[in-house]
Amino acid sequence: MGKSFDIGLERLTGAGAWPGSETERRIEAGRFDTDAGRETFYLETFGCQMNEHDSEKVAGVLLARGYKQVETPEAAKVILYNTCSIREKAAQKVFSRLGELRPSEGEPSAAKSREVDARLNARKVVNAGGGKIIGVLGCVAQQEGEEIFERAPWVSLVCGSASYRKLPQLIAELEAGNRRVTGLDTDTDETFETEITRRDNPFRAYLTIIEGCDKACSYCVVPFTRGPERSRASASILQEVRQLADMGYTEIQLLGQTVNSYADSSARKMRFSDLLVATAEISGIRRVRFTTSHPRDFGKDIVEAIEAYPAICEHVHLPVQSGSAAVLRAMARTYTRDEYLEKVAWMKSAKRAISITTDIIVGFPGESDADFQETLSLMDSVQYDGAFCFKYSPRPNTPSLAMNDIISEDEKSRRLAILLEHQREIQRSRNEKLVGQVAEVLVDGKSKRANQWSGHTSSNRVMNFSSHAENILGDYVQVKVTGATPNSLIGEAVTGPVASP
Ligand code: SF4
Image (cartoon, rainbow, N blue to C red; front, side, top):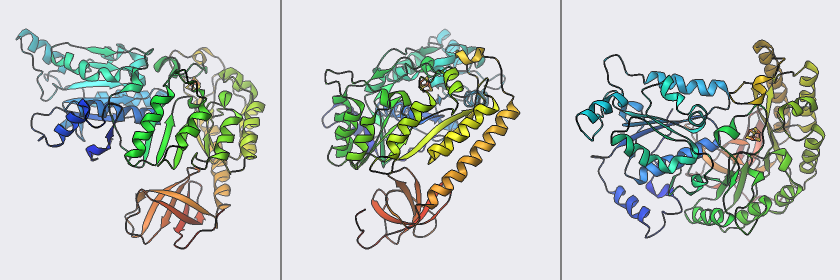
């Protein structure tokens, strides 16, 4: 469903939103506006963390221009879906949402309405019933492009992630009578510089530091939908982190499809690990996270930075995708099983206990049962603290589409079930070993049950715990682990002094 939007305007931030700026003036003006006359938008997000953060930017861009976000498509003049195409199911979901918006017979679509308006020389779009603006954003937009108009003719706007700054202009073009508009460039770094970002998470601020991907994994659509790698200049990133710290954020998450492939676009040429350290050193920042890392570019310097700076979280998400050397080759992952395990060994021998999570695909074309067993044995070796496991899903424009030796859906499902159960047992056993330890938790949720709270540890584990404190949302609390499940820890807040580890 659509994201909630009941946040204060003080949560809006961005390079241009600082004291005295034009954007700030507009936001301030908006703060005292009535809703009368304001255009409305509904925004629903599918997919990964990058998309969630992109939606924060989209909402920010529209809010800064006087739009008001609403909770249902029915209440909105502009309906936007920020889409994901990484798996077929995710892409289908979007078309099924669009199907729900198909104008009923006799009801004008927005495009049709505008044709009629244009004939009457009217500038205003009919803003009732089917006369809404319906837009597709994100990866499906980039992948399908103008074909979306063929499949769902009531859609009038198609825009990829690199063009979000142009959204108000695209919407204005529609209102001026254009039937259909697109923003589908991929080779621009405009996406980093959105004027303003509406932040949904009051405890963790996301920052995209690298967009696109230059790897060419044979199953992946990202290089097609998000374009080539473009890194943001380190000074601009650090300036935004300082602004976020001034606003009260203590946890920063750096984002990128391959975040550790970061290549500073400025003369400073900061390495990714230097950027982690520089972020961790900013006053007020207590936690720095990063995702997703690519194994090929994962250097020992990252582990050393985690060891040396407690503010850099003791968690690395390092997608392996398969434990079989042959399948890794077919996937064009650019590392071998042994190279991957070497990087894991660096983390396992670090001075801090680094939690490792991963992504795994089962049923890639040609994956034999022996290959699958290799994946299970790799899981045993690594002992992941979490794993996102998926069935292989053929995607348009990808080399694996042409590969033979397709694995049946039944077999993929069988392997997936085995994998999930295997990982569940690993997680159960790893979490149980933490019982009796004390961990620092950033409190980000309150249960309906009295005195029950939840939060995340530095290792990114979910901790559900009891505390009699009145309001600790956003606080860092020491919690003693009293129990464990495969997916979370159970604990109680420590009230007295805590011994140093
Ligand atoms: S590294 Fe591979 S899987 Fe990841 S975004 Fe790039 S092409 Fe896709």
